[in-house]
Image 1 (spheres, rainbow, N blue to C red):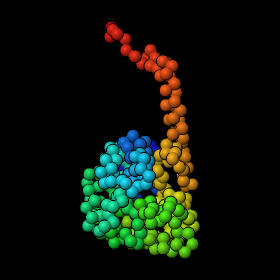
Image 2 (cartoon, rainbow, N blue to C red):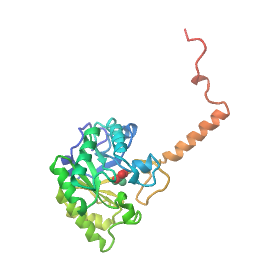
Image 3 (tube, protein in one colour):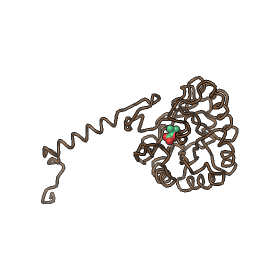
Length: 274
Ligand code: KIV
């Protein structure tokens, strides 16, 4: 896709059809201006539950609510005309039963206009994925490091090394067979990510996985250098906006204290110009 060519937003089937083709491009977004910046460049935009950590200062994604996802989903939707929007199902909104998952997924789609939802889990979530897909809800799956399970995974570790690779392969096959139209592979060793990509019929979207995946996703604040609390190995900072922003704020503070700002061009004359 060229950055300038006008296109309609892809549907989940269009994303699925990109298996093995030009890599799919994706970023997270949480606000209208960010969504506008990436609309022409991304195939799909994820309103990730990473919003909790990145914008709200939460220690993990576990505190993210349906209301937060809906509010940020609505904001992102206002900034997109060309990219598909996927909204994350937050922790606690889909695990209890297939019916609860359906109610919450339908609400997310109805109230945000999202084209699909994403949920975390492999074999254990396959039945729920099938239930949603059979009822008209396109699902993107997310396996490997699933941050909502951080307390049972015991940390943000690489997933699927050694013998655990077979279980991850089983997760990938299960979500593909259940009808997911794509699957995020997070923090999965490169060779395993390549084997999964070759094995399943739906696109794999890598984050800390492999350049051989069918697409890539990053958290936008990570790749712009806006989120600086920590940097995962798999993040490449394509800009350092956090540093630039802080330097600009320091310059503003200095200019105010020195009475250099506001200058003549920023203030209004007592008499209106004739
Ligand atoms: O919430 C999120 O940002 C995500 C991506 C890391 C895939 O799930």
